[in-house]
Image (cartoon, helix red, strand yellow):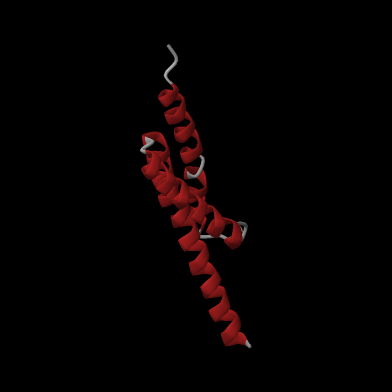
Length: 95
């Protein structure tokens, strides 16, 4: 018999791991200019809500995948916000 939970874990692994290269790249280059603040803000909120949904329906693959994805995406978002604030400070000083 096919284990549908296994399918959930494999899907969760794939989607969660897709963020690792982006996090590594940003940590290495310290460059977040190519990513959208609005997209990552919306995405982090959506992942958080999916995690809450997973808790509510008691679906472990959804909870685990979204908790890890939330951590990775929130790291990217925090670095993007840091860079946007730094850029605003620099443009304010030069004005």
